[in-house]
Length: 264
View 1: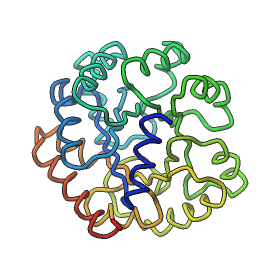
View 2: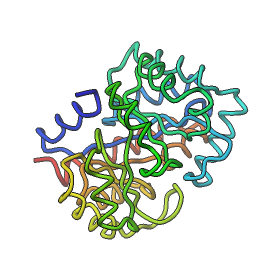
View 3: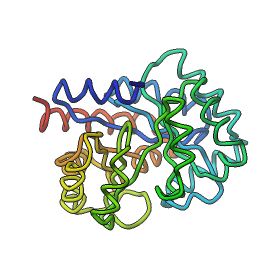
């Protein structure tokens, strides 16, 4: 059981919903990235999703695309991301999950990537541009190293594919709330809620809903059928605007709202 699984087990035992906060490495700068992780944990985040900037982030909307551009202009690289991880591990044991694209990892060497990033303190990875059917070798490498490779389900996932995707899932399953890219938007979370209910038939792995969540109210709606919510663009936009205090206030508001509505 790695940090992700231990945290989700603790949340379940406590009857609480999880909050995963996405932060782009190096946007607006490295110091803010590290401080945002520190303060997000203090304000109730249960897991940090660290964005690994890439020039063509196909799953990301305008805000996170902008953050990637800022980070790349700041000369963010995988080597510098390893340094960020090491700095975070000096003060925190919070689960850390990378979110990046296969081009960077393939160029680095996926097995080497897993070993180096795990050694620096990362617990898993989200790779949205590699479908389940093409990830067998990646899953094997991750399994051998006790490193989580997150699986995805969406409103368009068939039940047959869901069964195949979920059967070996570890850590958490990323439940994409709508057919689109990341970004704050109005979403009917009852749709992905129904998908989550179906997925429960095939897995005991925790389910985390992401895409669109920009307020405490949206977090409460998204969490209704899930174990955790994933919040990215709403936080990243505030960080890009140099509004760290406001970003952390949002995290705190979501923590309070989720506990008020779901904590047992």
